[in-house]
Each structure stands twice: as C-alpha cells, then as structure tokens.
Amino acid sequence: MNSYTTIYSLRLTIWTIVGAVVLAGCQQKVKPVLVQASVTEEDRLMDQLQQQCLDYIWKGGEEQSGAARERIHTDGDYPQDDSDVVTSGGTGFGIMAIVAGIERKFIDRDSAVARLEQLVSWLEKADRWHGVWPHWMYPSGKTKPFSRFDDGGDLVETAYLAQGLITARQYFATGNAREKALAAKMNKLWEEIDWNFYTKGKDVLYWHWSPNVGWQMNFAVKGYNECLIMYILAASSKTHGIKAEVYHKGFMRNGEIVTDKVYYGLPTVLDHFDSDDKAVGPLFWAHYSYLGLNPKGLKDKYANFWDLNRNHALIHYRHCSENPNGYKGYSDECWGLTSSYSMVGYAGHCPQEDLGVISPTAALSSFPYTPEESMKFLKFLYLKHPEIVGKYGPYDAFSFQSDWMKPHYLAIDQLPIVSMVENYRSGLLWKLFMSAPEIQAGLKKLEFTSFQQ
Image 1 (cartoon, rainbow, N blue to C red):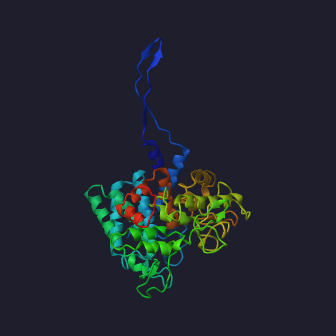
Image 2: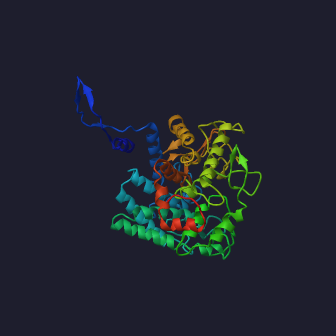
C-alpha cells in the first residue's frame, strides 16, 4: 500500500444518525451507522500534488543544511556547480510546506521538528549582513554570489524566509518543550533582521547590500511586484522596524501606483509596470507575498488585495484561453504564465511577454483565487498529460508549441504550490501567519483598514 492510499484509508469517518422509522405500525430504534466519508478524485489529486511538491525539500533538500536546493534537475544536467546551492527564499517556502505536510500527515511531526532544528541551527551560522541572508548559499553557509555585485544581503529573499519562520513559530509556539525551544530560535532569527538599515535612511527599502561593494546594486524596491511581504514585515518588526512613510512613499509611490487600467475586461487595480505597454506581471507576484499574508479582506487606501490577485490570475487564464498568439496547447484547461525555465533560459513569462511556455506553478499556486480554473489544469496534468509530472510534481515548465520540456525543478516555483493549495483547502498558513501579534500591529501601522485576525 503506497503512502497516498494510506492517507485516503485513514480519512476520518463520520457518524450518520438515522432517526426513528415506522415499520409494521410501530417505531423502531435504529443504531448509529458508521459511514466512510467519501474522498473525491479532486481530494486525491490535491493530496498527490502537495505531497510530491513537498518532497522537493523533504526528500530532495540539501543534506548538510536541511535547506531547499535552488534547483533539482533529475536528469543531472546542472549549470556550473549549482546542484548543492541552496536558496534562502525557497527555504522559507519550504518551511511553510513542511508545516502543511505535518497537518496533512504526509510527514511525521517529530521528524519534521528534527529537520527544522537542523535547518535553524544552520541558518544561525550562515552568512548574514545586518541579519539578512544572501539569495544563494553553499552547504557551508557561505555566500554564492547571485551576480557580480549581488554577493551580500538580499532583503526580498530574506523576507520570504522570515515569512516561513514566523508561520512555523506560530505553529510550534504552543507545542511541547522541544517545539517551544525551536519556536524561540525562529523568533530570534526573525528579530535579528535589520530592516531599517536597508532604507539607507530614505523612505524606501533597498533590495541588496554587499560587504564588498556596499550599495552598488542601488535597487530601490517600488511596487507593484512580489515584494509587498517585505514591507509588511519591515513595518511589523519590533526590533528594527521601518516608519510607515517608507511603505507609503516607497512601495506605494505616494499613491501613484493606483491605476484604472483594465485588461481582458478586468481592473488591474495597481500599476504592475511603469509603462503603458504592459498590464500585469508574472503570476508569482500573486503568490510569494501571500503564502502567509491572507489576501482575503486585505485592504488599504490603495487596493483590495483579494480583487488585485484574483483579477491577476483571471487575466492569465483569459489570455491563455483566448490564445491571441495561436500557441499550440493553450486552452481553458492549460494556462498560467510566470517566471520559470524556458527554451531560452529563465524568463519572466506574462501575457505581454509570452513565449508559448506554460509554468504549472502559475495556475496551481492560484488555487485560492481561481479554484475551478486551477482544478481544470490539475486534472489536465495528472489525468491527461502525466508525462509532465515527475517525482517532485509537475516539471517547472513546458511548451507544446516548441515541443520542449525538461525534468527540471526550481524551489521558488515548486514549493509555493504546497502552501497555496493548503490555503485553498484549509487556510492553515494564512491563519498561522496572521495570528502573529506583530503582523497585526504592522498592518495597523501601515493603515490597512481590513484584514483577517
């Protein structure tokens, strides 16, 4: 019996109480009947998807650190020395996936705690600058430069890691003594991040700082993009928090970010690009910040973030369904564009920059926003095109148009699927992250008028 079958067979049963019935003119008492709760095909597919994607870090994680590898190529075709390089942001996504895996009984709780203890101990010793980790690290914890001048702290990737640490901290904070100790270590790592340093004393956050070239990258992060979570965490920090003006003047550009642009009949709500040539970005913008941050009911004076993200996903769906470029394979069940591998290397796929490449994480991580459309795609993969699915779930990308696909995976594409599907099914990661008191305080500080408690 495989692990998936075991999960289904252990599903909770429900009691159905059959009331009194009249038989032969007199009432008969009927004993409670034990009825097996049905497990739908859709439940099975979501279980399989989540467990396979979780295995990316659970079984495929780097052994010395316990962290998520930047990439896993099951054909062994790696660029340079990348096979053991780990990613800080992808590891944050992996931490959240492990929490979901515990709740789904995909993995043993004690084993998960041991794995996270290993990871946290490694993170404590790994390279950090003002509490901020680099994008890539070797198993030793030393930095692997992401680019020539990007060889130090990466605040965006660190934000994704912190989102995972806070979520797991909330999960284990009420556990046994061992789990509480783990939660305390996670909290310490989060509180050591010096968000304020990365403002350079200005009203905006900067993405990078290098111990060798300082602020050479000079990348001021302004919205809208995948970085909302960074600003919310920076405002929420009790130890190194930013002023509210950094969010309003920096990320939200003094309100200039608001737009009335409509694309495929849907309001885009915020300006994704400072250009009239593009309307919406890759779909990971609707995922990375919202693995823990609950977009349901999330509003400030600039946007209703649920409408923003749902429209973003539906625009991608309508684009692929209408298929204006006439690409082979695009349909209402084969859709979704985001940054991923492609025939020409890593590319930022979106409706305005469409190479004919479908990235499975785009539709699958959109489950909370587009449940029916995402389920169509899930069935399309697993029931009609199982050749697109490997040991860690659907491959990173494929193109029927170019007859292209490789058995390659990326952490930042594979691991968000676990959490976003779980948020669709139970809201687990949203509940945990939003229960953090400092997150509630940070949202109020930034004048969010509505959000889940």
